[in-house]
Image (tube, rainbow, N blue to C red; front, side):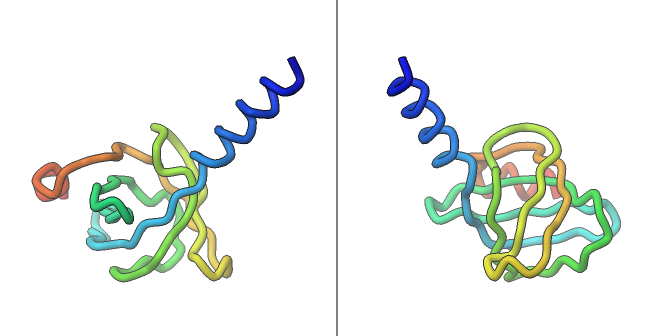
Length: 97
């Protein structure tokens, strides 16, 4: 039983942290579009006032709806966001932004 729990815990930890690059940021709405390594897109809304910019590499949980805290890859700055969608196409991002 312990082994099964350990495998589930390890799988969850593995899927929780993803890395993606900000490809669009709309300051007026706080909407952020990110492109992940596999070419899919993530859509979120920033809920804090940390400076956001295109080209920023972020990591964190990007595959569950709801509030999350992402960090820049250097771990210097954290960003509070609300994840709206993941595994999205470029067309979906264009419509949402």
